[in-house]
Length: 484
Image 1: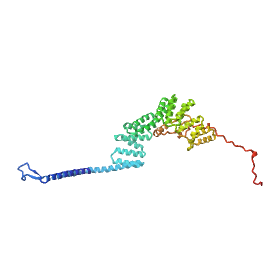
Image 2: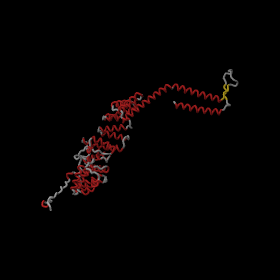
Image 3: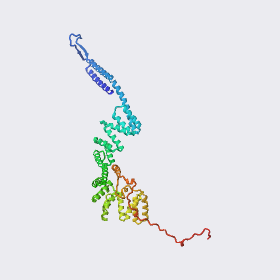
């Protein structure tokens, strides 16, 4: 209202300035003559004379009067509407204040206040959509999922709030473990809205929870296409999913699917040791030793792992000693500065009986900090080969109380590496997929791991020889009572 009145005043002022300029231009010597059409009517001789300035001034007064009367009439007529508007504004203000209080209470975890303020907001303002959102959030905070679900369900009937309702229902279902309902709501939302990243997250998470690796792979590809996930994370997650799929296929004796899935995982992510180890093992079983060796060599260049070294040894174990040594050397060249490369060289030296070379490589490793049980075992073997039985025995004793290595724990003494359960694969999809970090379930569960060296094969240190004294050589001390 104020802005409209200001506009009117500006127009009047501009009009007045223009008229004033025109009056100055006309001056006081010009007149308008008004004559009546009836010649018999009484009129002054020569007609009515009105100066131009007076006529212009009269026009200004008339115009201003009309505008003032119109503005006054409009003001009077608008009084009821303004009264209603003022009441509505105050009501909306109170409703917004109640909603604000409800949202703050919900965010701070004050369930009772959130619920009361949400109810007051709904009573003050006729905004069903906004009221349902506030009520649903208040119900979630207050620990009333049934009420929250009822509010989100009502939102599905309104086009404006359907997406909010789908997200709320999907989240509630996912949190209570109802993966079927969570996938249903998330899938519908993902089909309707290409920008719904939350739907991708819930849909993918629910499929992983159900162990549906194939469908999760499809969802992952769609999420990457829509740019809901980065390429690096998607590539790592895909490698884990394919390896989990291979393990599942192998369990039901579908070796073709298992081999192909593991191969794709290993080629797509050489740094994922579980996928490479499984692919190599399945390829060897199919007589494809050369392909298996190439996969391990490529993987060693990215991320060496003791399981890969064992798998590679299995491939070259039947070859002559010189050929085998040459093959192992070609593997170590892929990543010469890595710790596992050094340990592989140590193990090969010990296997060939070269304790000096082995100890030369191990010595700096065992002197830094607290050596692991694996390092202690290797040191014991090296000292034994160097004909130092006492030192070997000391390292055996240290190995008994030394900490284990998480990577080495992945090697089952009675089976293959990385014997993950479905629960382990589910964790690995996110741990390795999102950060590139492996998990070590055997280490976490304190399960038996494959020993680095069979400590029983190391000779015990000889017992110290105690020389017995010659009885005749024993001189008895004189009694203190004897006077010499």
